[in-house]
Length: 444
Image 1: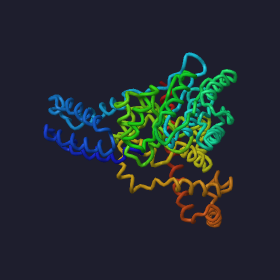
Image 2 (image 1 turned 90 degrees about the horizontal axis):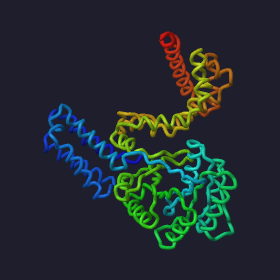
Image 3 (image 1 turned 90 degrees about the vertical axis):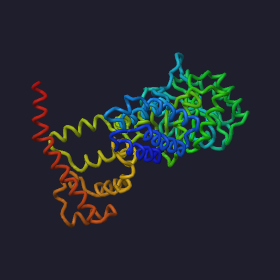
Image 4 (image 1 turned 120 degrees about the vertical axis):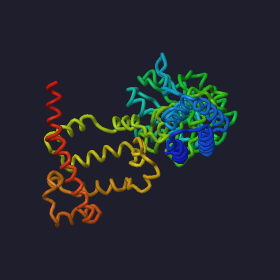
């Protein structure tokens, strides 16, 4: 995830503060210098860093902070508050138009991931807001751009409007809006042409489309890996188009992430969504407070819960609860739960959302998603009877399962031991303790 290096450096600066019973102005200056360097190295805009350090120092110098019983914690809270404010303070949501359909114009340079994000946004709007989206192919220049939009649209079963013989993006956009009205699509996402650099021809076409379809939102798609250039790109687009929000893609990459911290302060435009992976489901609303919490190593439990809600099927969760009550949890259920966890994203990403997790310490922990795949292969090599009743798996069965899954007998034994321990734990929880707890709850 972006900000990994920044998180580590801030963590080191705070560690020194936490270790002191009394924090002097000299200590504070030293910490502010370290925070300043960490932000600049993360590619945050210089003026933004200067203003940020000035605001934090001003608030922290107060006697109520330096003379408090926990000055280190107070200063960390101030940094958290100011980071949140820097990124916009509150979550900026998509605006839905008073008239139907709501039209969203997507703009950005070539290679930012705009076309893929159009599909991500469409899928998100259908799932989260029960919308009936229509994707519009207005990139008439890039070879295979229309085909790319059709491919990602098909993967999510979302219709794509295209006029392959038409070479006028404005005509395509206006025709698409009429098509949406006639076919009951209430959310139109217009994928426009990108360029390798900003040019007047590109801007004029975007202005013409804007005038023709009057979009409710003009979202600028920026690649987080372009660093400081991302902010300059945002300024250029905003001066011509008056964008309503920013989408930051590739925020999961090995990037310094400074653009995410600079873009709101420099352009005044909020980040509305972020791309956190390559899958079409890897889209998150941008919450400044949650991002600040992640940067400061305090985790992001709310986003983790939201991912779980999206990935975990309610019916199967209820069925699992019933099985646990009756102590009928078997390897089929174990496999199903693993597959649901996988939908939430890579394990290494999920663990970092938990509070108090030190990213450095994670280097020594086995968070290999390949391990999950090996466990899946072992269970899928078992017969239905073996999955339902693992106690029947003897030595010859273990050899067969190991050979069928491409693993050793040792891995099969390890899985069976882990499952047995899990069953014992669940028996204690659902039998005695949990049963008594439920009875007490009912009596109240």
